[in-house]
Image 1 (cartoon, rainbow, N blue to C red):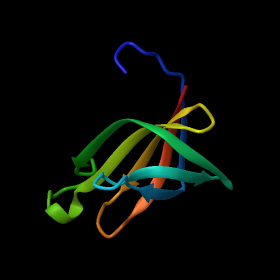
Image 2 (image 1 turned 180 degrees about the horizontal axis):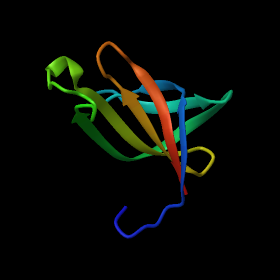
Image 3 (image 1 turned 90 degrees about the vertical axis):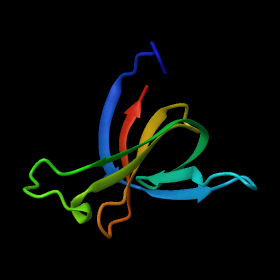
Length: 101
């Protein structure tokens, strides 16, 4: 991704994500459904995780930590997207965070 430039469009909407893995491989997004349209994931460009406390937190207990895993993917429509799995507390929510062009 080095010197590439992206026009970023924030989306921030919940999506449904299908996960899949090659035999012996790691589970990763295979497709996602956004606004009724299902897009296939053609390539995983980058994966990274974050574990931070909310800025408004007065204490820093392990149960308050925000845990998210982010996948930058190239979808079947030719665009790149950032899919985020929010695993904070008991939450398991997929968010289509943004589109990268």
